[in-house]
Image 1 (cartoon, helix red, strand yellow):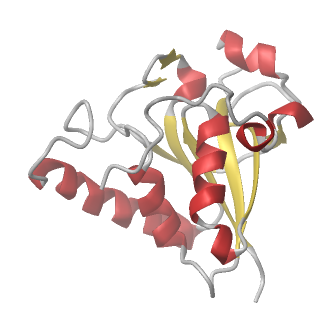
Image 2: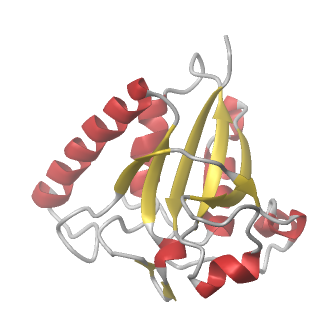
Length: 173
């Protein structure tokens, strides 16, 4: 079966990549970090951090749908960050830290919308507060060009186990 692609923005890409890699290593997923959703070709980290490129820091995942479903990945995406804060994850602020799902097919768009609706219901009806706010603000957008981040960002927390990891990247339910 052919590999499929999932691209998620959920704050600092180091933590997003790390938590996906750690939790899906038995499913042979391949991850890389980069920039998507902006207006500048081949952006560099400092440009993206300035907030002037409109790019989001994102994690792109190659996966085998016979081993793990896209819906499972989308639900996990919601479990590991606060999907209710606009352009922010914890102390990281700016549009580059927004919550977004960049879909690569119409089927994936529909799945992302369905999972988002289910998670929104869970947020409203959960016995404890899952997120800071009650309304999911995650954008669901068609994926455009994905630009790989510089090499030193790839697998950053594996190479630098004491490196910065956004405190909002943990499994909530």
